Amino acid sequence: MLDYVLMVIGAILVNNILLARFLGNCPFIGCSQQIESAIGMGLAVIFVLTLAGALTWLVNAYILLPLGIGYLQTIAFILVIAALVQFVEMVIQKTSPGLYQALGIYLPLITTNCCVLGVALINVNEGYNFLQALIFSASSAAGFAFALFIFAGMRERLAFSAVPKPFQGIPIALITAGLLSLAFFGFAGMIK
Amino acid sequence: MIEPVINSVLTLSGIGLVSGLGLGIAAKKFAVFVDPRVLAIEQVLPSANCGACGFAGCHNFAESVVTGKADVSGCLVGKDAVAQKVAAVMGIEAKTGQFMVARLLCQGDDCKAERKYHYLGIQDCKAASLLAGGDKACAYGCLGLGSCVGVCPVNAISLNGNGLVKVDEAKCIGCKKCTLVCPRKVIQMVPAAQEVTVLCNSVDKGPVVKKNCQIGCIGCALCKKACPVEGAIVVENFLARINPQLCDRCKKCVAKCPTHAII
Image (cartoon, rainbow over all chains, first blue to last red):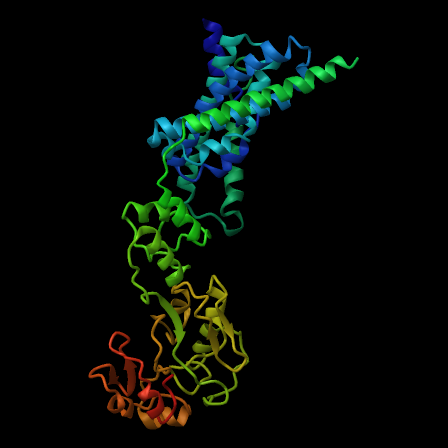
C-alpha cells in the first residue's frame, strides 16, 4: 500500500512530468493563459492519460512482448493513442455534449501530446504491472494538471504586472516556468 | 530471419486495421445528428473564420443562424451575396443593403486642393496633422498619407498616388478600423447601397472652401432645390448631406452641383 502512496507522491511532486521530466511543454505554455482553460486541459489529460496508460500496457504485454517485437513500442503506442483519443472524442460528443464543449479543442490536441506517449513508455520501461501502470498514469496526469494549474495562476498574475518590454509575453512565461521547475527541484531525492 | 519482419508488419497493420474498423463503427454508432441546414450554410460561408460576425467561427455562426440566435445577414465578409444564399437555405428573405462600408468623403487630390506647405516629415496622417494641422489648406480633407491603408485588415484601401486614398468597397468588410485611425474623420461608414454621396467633409463657409479646393461642397443648397424628394438632402453648416433612406437615386443633384462634389 505504502508503495502506491509513494508512487503517487513521486509522480505528482518529485518526478513531475512537466517540471522534472520536461514532457508536454507545448500545452504547458499554450494552455496556461487562463486558469479556466488550464483546468479544462488538465482534466482532459487526466482522462486520456489514464485510459492510454492502461491500453498501451495491455497492447505491450499481450501483443508486442509475446511476439518479441517490443522495439515497436513507440510506433504502436502512437497508433493506439491516436485511435483512442479519436474514439473517446466520438463517445463524449454523443453521450455528453456538455463535457464535449468543455474539453472541446483540448481533446484532439492531446493526440499528439508527448507526455501521453512518454508516460506510456515509462510504464513499460519501469516494468510496472497493470495496477501500477494505471496508478502511475493517473498520478502523472494529476501532476501535469497540478503544474499547469499553478502555472496558469502565476500567468494570470503576470498579466497585470509591469514586465519590462523585452520580456513581455512568452519570454517571461518561460522564465517563470524555469523558476517553477527549480522550486519543484526541491522535492528531488525525496523518493527514489 | 524473415519472421520478425512479418510479425512486426502484421502486428502494426493489425492494430491499425482494428482501430480503423473500430473508429469506423464508432463513427456510425455515435454519429451526432447535425442539422443539414448548418452544413448547407457552412458551405456558402467564406470559411475565413474571421469572427467579424461576433461568433467563434463560421461553424458557430451557421449553428446560431439555424437556432435563430444570429441574423442571416450577419456575415460581414460575405455581405449581401452570402446573406442571400444563407437566407435561401433558411427559406426566408434577407434584408439587403444594410452593410456599411468605408467611403472617403473627399475628392481634393493634389490637382484640386491647395496646400499650406510642403510636408516632408514622417509619412503618417497623424504625424502630419500635428504640424499646424496638416499640409492641406482644407482642415477637413484627406491628408493622403495612408494611416488607414496600414490598419485595413483586408487591404481594401490603397494610396491613389495623387494625395488621396482609394477604398475598394467590394473588399471592405466594415470593420471601421480606418474610420477610427483617421485624424480628420474624413473616411466614414456609409451604407454600401448608397449610390449618391456628397464627397466632401468641409464645414467651412463657401468662399473658404472655394479658395482651398476646387471640388468641395460650398453649401449653396442647389442640390436641395433640385432634389424631388422632400428632406432627402439636408444642408447644415455649409455642407450638404444625403439621407440614404430617402434618396431615390435620380441623380438630379449630381448634375446640378456647381463644384461636382456630389457623385
